[in-house]
Amino acid sequence: MSEEVFLALCRPGFESDLAAELSDRAVDLGVAGYPRTDRDNGYVLWHSQQGSLMPLLDTGLIFARSLYPCAHAFTELPEADRIGALWPALQQQGPFNELYLEHADTNDGRELARFLRGFRKALEPRLRKGGLLRERAERRLHLFFQDSRNGWLGVSPVSLPLPENGVMRLRISPEAPSRSALKLEEAMLRFVGRGRPDGVHTAVDLGAAPGGWSWHLARLGIKVTGVDHGKLAPALLDEYPVRHVSADAFTWRPERPVDLVVCDVVDKPARTLALMQRWLLQGWAKTALFNLKLPMARRYRESRDLLTRLDQGLEKGGVQALIQAAHLYYDREEITVWVDARRDH
Ligand SMILES: C[S@@+](CC[C@H](N)C(=O)[O-])C[C@H]1O[C@@H](n2cnc3c(N)ncnc32)[C@H](O)[C@@H]1O
Image 1 (tube, rainbow, N blue to C red):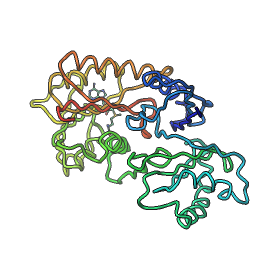
Image 2 (cartoon, protein in one colour):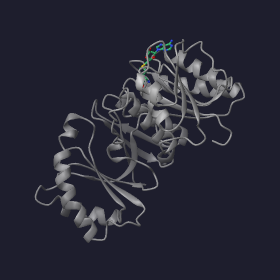
Image 3 (spheres, rainbow, N blue to C red):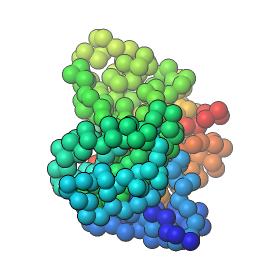
């Protein structure tokens, strides 16, 4: 049986965490294989020797920004005719619905951006003319360049919402009280698939100041209570449905249940986890979105153990919940977790 290769992109510096996660998930799926990576290169290649990682495409991975199977490696493309050299593989894998030209999120990778803009201008019309780029096609073409002559050709189903380079392009509004607003926007898109979760009308924001997350929620029409000893941006209180409570996030209780609790307090992950678990078990909120600070080493193992603890704690308390976690583009030394404990999730 021929070997199946997957390419997974990550934040540079998190390759060993992603490799550990891939190995763990492969064991769950009964897949035999091994990860290959170089330190700080921003991606991991998974080689399956038996079985397939395809089921992971839908569930996603905490430390992968994107994951897809690679059909071909391309090596030493001739500078004079890269497209000609790629053409047989493109014909074999096409037609495609869209073209992603990708690189790692490293200095070397970003230096390829200009070359890739020029290459797109040459390749896109050729693909269209050759009938390989069509609106109705169901596959997306990924050409991942390690440098301007070497890389991988991969494909993913268009139904899978993967952004190019695994990075959503979001713009900060000049009105946002902090850049953190972008993280909440990215989290909602990643976990809920759109800007706003259905049925969420009220929210509590623990550790809200200066107010980026509260602002983002309020802009969606959600009524927010922001809890923080620090001050919220004045415009937030004047122009949006936001109420400020100066209190301790770990002891404050809502007067009545809300649809969503979010928490951006920077604290020990076990403490944040216990707080969120309490909110969900007490029924103070039906959904939760929060950050968990990561340790310096073994970040995947720690994340997995914390999420297992949360799952077991909720189950023991009779709460069935869907738990998702991701190391988002706007996350640095933390992961973001989404918990949906509504019956219809
Ligand atoms: C990273 S900032 C939050 C940024 C906010 N999400 C935004 O979008 O602007 C963390 C906040 O948590 C607050 N904080 C820390 N410990 C707290 C506690 N025990 N109770 C309430 N707020 C706390 C800090 O005052 C700080 O404003």
